[in-house]
Image 1: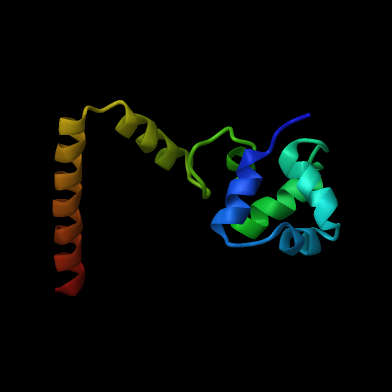
Image 2: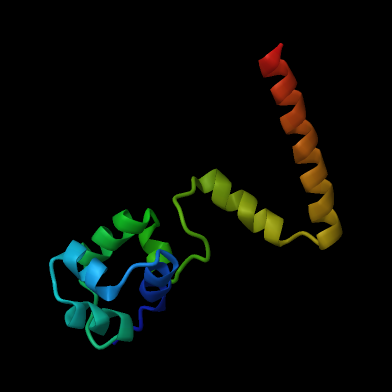
Length: 110
C-alpha cells in the first residue's frame, strides 16, 4: 500500500483534523486515517476531492512534484531552470526581475 504523507502534511498545515477531512469526503475518521497510514489505497475520486480541497495538483498530492498549486508548462520550465542556477546567479536573476517589475509598475502608473 502507498503511504500518503502529503495528505497528512496538508491536513496538519491547514489545522484540520482527520474528522474534518472525513466529513468532507463522506467517510469516517478511522477510514480516512487509514489513507494517511497507507493501510488503504486512496481512491482516485477521493484524491481529486482532496486536491480540490487543498487547491493543489494531483501530482503534488501523490508526491510527484515538490510544489503545490497548478503551474503552466512555462512556469514549470522556469522552476527547473532556477534550480540549475548557482546562488550567485539566482541573486542576479532576482535583481533583474525586481527591476523589470519596477519598470512595469511605472508604466502601469503613467
